[in-house]
Image (cartoon, rainbow, N blue to C red):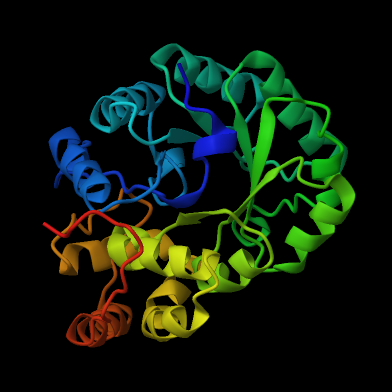
Length: 311
């Protein structure tokens, strides 16, 4: 049985990276180790096959295999949500049905890929997928990456679909959290989706954070989130200041390569991405290496927020 989103969709949900071998086949054993390490470090949930998981570079069979792997590793202890990023409503509905069959806890549903749908078309896409599954759905808004802006008014238009329970806001406009709350009250569970506005988003009501850079520093990410949630800003701000150069990487077009390069430097994964994404090189690589070197040389002291002891 899926975990209740009203009780469990809160805290930091890393957008888990998909690990590849040198020939670009999925390294399932390495992906399992990545997920095990995140859970060991105390994250609150997992998003697999999101943008950072290279969803659109994966086959349907690979997505199903990753669903099964993540469900097995999580063991029902924390929610596992899968990104649904497909060309059509029919394709998205098929992935949703597979996720329900496997027994995942929910979907992170993006607008249709490639086609820049009109607002009415995007609303109908969300409704169509909601009709195809009983799983709870988090609507994902990321207009810089996907060219479609899911406005608060559009979310309000699907409020009568009970399985659409949450939204992930990645526009960077934190006012959206307030605007939607004014339109729909507490109807939707609000998530921050852009790393470098997380403290601001929490201050305005976000109860969860789908995070890219928490793949690399999960304990720091979860600690920062909990401090912001609990109003412990004097303790949160030094961590936020330290984290910010890394969090900015989540807002770049090449965020996947940046995050995986940081993972590699931190010995938490590989830098390999599937083409057309190519590894960073030259000045770009040097920039990431310098940011990581400074971050790792100045790791912040983490106040107690109830995380398990570090291994």
